[in-house]
Image 1 (cartoon, rainbow, N blue to C red):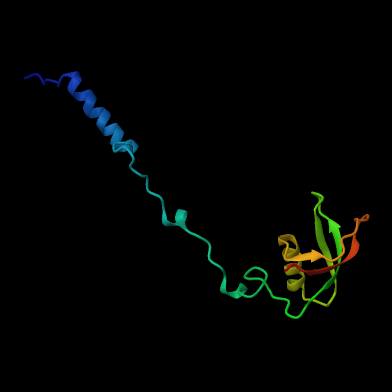
Image 2: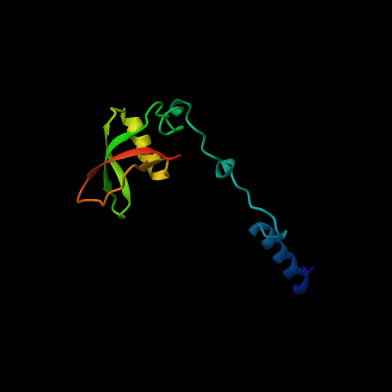
Length: 125
């Protein structure tokens, strides 16, 4: 008894449906699986709280800073060194960031010289 094969027009749509299911596009708008790591957000390390990496370190009681300014490779003025008062390296880094944010300003801006130059910074109010 010979085996009959189904007509080609009934096999082709079934084959296309199976291919679409395997490819993951059977349902319009369906999302592909993303592992939870793809949605993860970084958290602050508890050991860095109160440091430059965490929050800003307040310079309580400091009304002015004697610093040496210079220009970065893009031509912007930046704090190169805090001369007075004596600060920790973390506080010096915070002064650099605060100056870049505009929290400290130059008391009497003068034309920049070559290399670095001394200036006095006061808090912006």
